[in-house]
Length: 328
Image: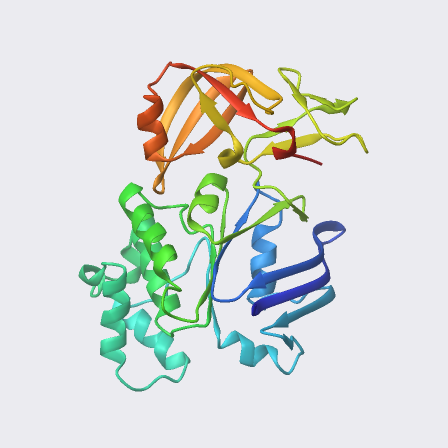
């Protein structure tokens, strides 16, 4: 297995506030990786470190197994493209902005063809002659992405790429992310606050809470307290398998939950009856939201949706094993 990044004992602080504290993190090459977590958890800081736009204050980063030394970083940066959450365009048309990117990277041959390919990839050739400063938020994101991929980078980093997109544009970006590394040795890392979206479209998921790694998709995240193998959220009680310490949070992966019309006769010790409050497509899977004391997000297949004949306001049972619960 090849790693695009290997991080060891990383710490980064703003003034005296610790933003990142990562003992060890390996990010696989040639895969799509999602960084998920609430606002302020350190996603943007981590992406800036991976782009070598900021220097880690403590610890070591390796890029494709090579140490990120002061001498090596300029060479690494040429292999990376970074799409910020709020991209900036220079004066001139969209085509002129893309041409400048190629010029800055000293790419001289076939510039018009490369510009057309980048625009066509994102279905925005109609924007080519527009002044970049007149673009809408969604158009700006697409052009900025075209600018990022036009140099054919080995690693593409995207900070909250879905923030300013309408539904159609969001679907286009999701499709782009899914297909980016297919048939090529490319690595894509993006951050999102939409945890279900990250889980659905990425090969790997990295979860951050208060700057630290958490082995959880951070979906169905409940707060409370634990005692004698029971975690009490204040609304429901969940049965745990571990009582080695006092936990304040639990999380259940949405694909670990089984929905049923009746309570299941099984080893699943956590069973709660609730009401279906939402049904939505989630990147090819179906997200069913059930209010059963707490709000549960459940990912099922379209086939399971049809077999259970689920409709809004139906009464269903939410079932999951104790070992499906991550407590921390």
